[in-house]
Image (cartoon, rainbow, N blue to C red; front, top):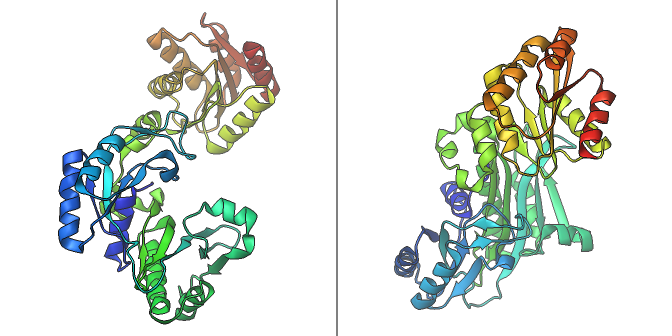
Length: 396
């Protein structure tokens, strides 16, 4: 589950991480009020207006701008709120901006030049250990840094039996070229950041940039936080931070009825029981010359009601040209699934795309007879290749 920047920062602050302070606003008037409050609390004269959407690269799309007075705060907030923000991490349609973060200006003049670093905490799946990835090249796309200057990316793996040790935090500060006050600040920053990551059961904390201010403070200027949904039952307060407006509407609807659905960009809808079979079915569609339009696991109970809901979800995608139902009848009998498909088809009555149904397992032969004798525009198959051939035929 992704969080907005302001939510991630509030979480970090609760663990002692220094952050760029800000206030969320949903209207230009609220933005001006927020700017005035920040000026009173922090003394900042300029303000940064940041679109709050679940996507990186907001600045490139015009979603992050600097305001030098209250008139500009109101004007810029009015431009950003309500816009469809297109970034390298969104679709061509972009994401609608519902709120902005009015943040303090932390690039103030001082004895030293501000410096930006990159830092993230995530799981190294190859070793099964958490690691801290960091670089002196903050403020840039880390993918670009990795491709062009890989020697500037450092990693520090954490032993799960000991956790982050003090020498590791000092090593990170040293590799970033810090000394004096900034060195001590960075060791505290790293320790607090890692504690926040572990205690919130997160799968990713990414701070880009981490800023060394002109007076050697270390703070998070941005935050990208992804929580592990499998652990949200332990964090009811964090689960309440979900913003469904930022998620795919069909995926949200599917989750509400207990279906595992992921929207994709293809033309063949998939309805399958079991994640492994779903992946194999997507490969099957690719081999047949199509592209999967979704991942949909209906689980072990493919009754008429569940099948009908699944059909409706798939058909919400206007790009779907065919539907492949691929069910292995182990726990659930194939004839029951077949009857569920027939009943769902009749209940809906407005399915205009061809449907290919492959049922294999318990009572598969009975299921095929039910489908073939239903009088509906549904094609049955037994073998994988037979299903692939029928998908290929309807797409031709």
